[in-house]
Amino acid sequence: MGYAQLVIGPAGSGKSTYCSSLYQHCETVRRSIHIVNLDPAAENFDYPVAMDVRELISLDDVMEELGLGPNGGLVYCMEHLEDNLNDWLDEELDNYLDDEYLVFDCPGQIELYSHVPVFRNFVEHLKRRNFNVCVVYLLDSQFMVDVTKFISGCMASLSAMVQLELPHVNILSKMDLVTNKKDLDDFLDPEPQFLLSALNQQMAPKYAKLNKALIDLVSSYSMVSFIPLDLRKDKSIEYVLGQIDNCIQYGEDADVKVRDFDQEDDD
Image (tube, rainbow, N blue to C red):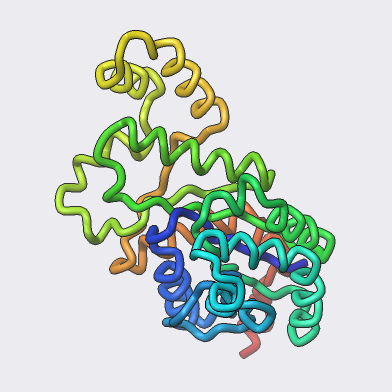
């Protein structure tokens, strides 16, 4: 049984920084994880890259050869990978044990999770390889300045979750950059009625029914709960990792170690 995190979120939400900090934390506590780059547009890494999708295709090459822009080029890269990504992963996994813990650092374009089927197919392939997979969705905490942006972030996350059909953990990243953390208290685990009231205050009356439908949808899919992550604090990283481990049942099949008190008495 293998374990995997699929780290997604908008561009600039701190996915690579999260992967780097997670790797450093696990190295400190002597826990083995491997970071996999799934972003053809990636340039620099602050962590050892166990597997790199740019070995198959890179955004720079596509933009130069086909004259595409960054977004169109990335979509082309992922469509090109659709027929090759799973075979590449199988070949790479031959170098690892069956119970490895992989963290996939993914691109930030939301259309890759809502319109292009490559990641859904990739997830299904991981499951066939006997991996328990969890989506880790990062949203920049500085984005949470009002209810409209909060709902927008939730809907983007929900779109990806519906497409991938996986357990998910939602994280507010970059908490170390927030000057007044009390401003976020209402959005960490808000009541649906609070969200609806705040949304109605900012939107025209004609959107009242739409607002209620959006809040009901977000509430029904349990998308109103975010975990704050402050990468300066080991306890914060440890708590987030614990929530993710619980989602993918990491460690539940480990052998229970029972102390031999009789042997200790003899010693």
